Image (cartoon, rainbow, N blue to C red; front, top):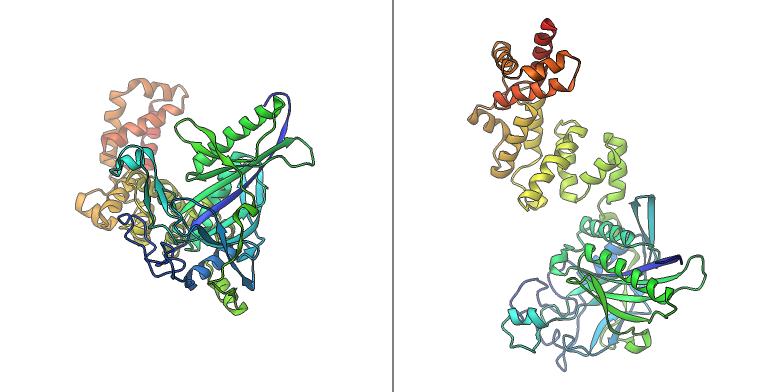
Length: 488
C-alpha cells in the first residue's frame, strides 16, 4: 500500500437458504439437485394471475436466526418488490423486505488473534431466491451449444434470510472468521444446512478504504456472490490492494459491483453499483404485513439450543477444558452432543475431548464422514477409554481398535477379543523382548548410559514395535531403566 496507511471497512451481506420443505410463497419443494426446471409452478415462474402465500415455517426460521444473533424482531414487517431485470428472475422483480425488515440490531462475536472481536448486525430480512444461470463452460457441460446460456428456475422462490452487518470488519481475516462463526451459529439452530457447495450460504462483501484516522468514509465497492470463505478472504485482500494502489496514484475509486475470478485471484468490474432508488421498492400489493405475536417470539426464544459461545464457556468451567479444546469440541452440535454423552457415561472429560478432536476428527476427515451419521456412539468411546485405563490396551492399540470400531460399528471389547489385541503385561515375556532390543541396539543403549535420556524413548519404541504395540509402555520403560541401570 506504499507509505500511505489506510483504514479498511468491510460489511457483509450474507444470503442463507432456510431449511424449509417448501418454497417461500408456494408449495413447490425446496430441494437441491433436482433435474432443471422440475420444481416449479405458476407462482415460481411469475405467470399472470398467480398469487403468493407466505410460508409460516420460513418466518419462524428467520425469527430463530434473528434471536440467535440478539436482534430485535419487529412486531410487523412488510414484503416489498425489488424491481430489476435479469433472465433468471422471471417475474421481473424479487419479493424481499426493505423499509420494514423482519429484525434489526444484534451482534456476533468471535475470538480473533488479538482477542475478542464483535461485529454489529444492521438487519435480518426475508426474501425469495432467484433462479440460476449457467454460462460458458457450465452451460457447455450441460449440453448447450457454444454461445448460449441455460436457465434453471428450480431455485426461484426458495426462502432466504439476508443478514447485513455494519462495516465493522477491518481485515479479510476478520471477514472469514465472522462467516465461520455465523455458519456455526446457524447450524446449531437448524435454521439452514449452510452447505456452501450447494449455495445454501452465499456472501456479498462491501469494502472501502480511507486514509488512516480520516472521518470521511471511503467509497464502498461490492464483491458479488462469493461462495467460499477462503475466496471471500482472497477477494477482499485483492480488492484492498487494488483500491490502495488507485488511491496512492491519485485516482478515485469508483462505486461499483465487482466479481471475484477464482482462476486469477482477482476481481473485475461487473457494473456500476445500484442505489436503493434504482430498484423502485414498493410494498407488495399481494402480501399483507407480517404480524408477529410476542408470545410466538418468546416461544421460539425458549426453543433455542445452548449456543456455541455459551457452550464453550460452560465446557471450560464445568469440565476444565482449555479454550482450544472447548472450541474444537463445540465445532458442531452433533460433536458437542457426543462429547457430553461420553462424559455422562463416565469418561474423563479431558481424555474424551482429546479423542474427539484428535482421533475422531482425523477419521472424519480421512473418510469424508458426517458427524451426524456415525456408526459408533458415545458408548463405544466410553468402552474404549475404559479398556485403555484398565491397561488392556496401549494407546497405539486403542487407536487401532477405535478406527476399526469407527468403520464397522463393532464394540471395542468385541474387536479386542476377536483379534487378541490385549496388551501384554507378562513381565517375563517383556524382559526377553527388552534383552533382544538391547542386544540389537548397543549404540542407543550406550547413549542412555552416557546420560542421553532421549535414547530411552527410542529403545521403548523398538520394544513396542517388536511386540506389535501390545507391550505396556510403562512396564517397558521401567524394565529398560532397571536393566541399563544395573550395567551403568
